[in-house]
Image (cartoon, rainbow, N blue to C red; front, side):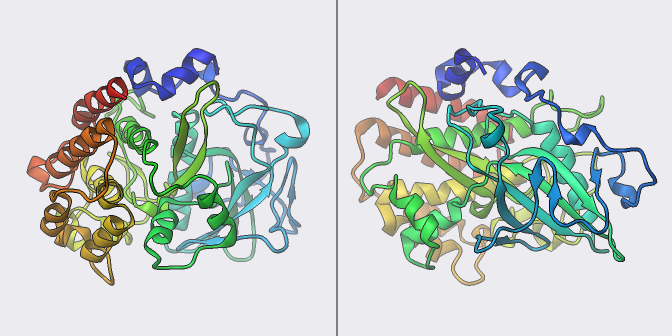
Length: 407
């Protein structure tokens, strides 16, 4: 990526319509991919997964799928989901010197990629794979806010087989883990603690406005009319936005004194195009972060992702408002036990509308109060008054520009 595009990504003053559309093919890694080299043979793939460029391996697969080794390394960290496990595998780019610098962040590639292994069952897991594969292939190069899909493999078995998704990069730290660490509700792994300690300081908050911008850009991108797989209106909904599905990559911006916490949005297995069939109709998302109108398994709409991201922003507001104690208070009000955000918005607003106990620099305090207005009046409100992602853009863009100008 050119230096100009790299600057655009981090400079809100340079934002223009082209940043809210998907990158041209020249911006996408064009090296030969194994996804394009499937051998012609009788497929054992489930019908719903055919035609997606998934590479079929032999049933006696031992872990090697050149250039990747998909086996689980010994003594490695494994993340478990509702229908999958995710673990790090060796990044062959380190050895071959392909793509030596990250296109968006200017970092050398991590020595590890992520491998997501899904054992197919009869409960919609094939549709989860289909949804995630289609969406991640469409997202490739999107502002660095989504995981990149490198390859997808299928290993047949006497049952329905197993699918392996190779994803970049491998990241251990999520927004949820960071917030849980702050409030002391759960122990964190040693590697996660080391990650947090390498950048987190209780009196430094200047990287959160850019984080809010990046998340908002991602949300606007899902609703962007330029992202279509057909001639129809096919805006995308993630359907399960929550702190666990936002991974964090801290680092320094190239040729800049600025430090950033770059968000990566993951787990698009529930995602869908507006006209599409839900990937797993029996699961509508995580109850704690669902919008009020989704009670009783009602379907999502164009603003349900806005609500869910607003819940995440409210937790960050707590940090800006009163540090660790602010995050803890929001958690106690809205999430502790079996609580759901939608049942406690009045109490959340009452707390965040109080005078803050955290003293911030003037520019950051102005940003905090603007963020408070955006979340309270445009995101965590009833459906009739909630902004969709594109209308929300009209709120956050001037807010970010004002913050950048006043620093």
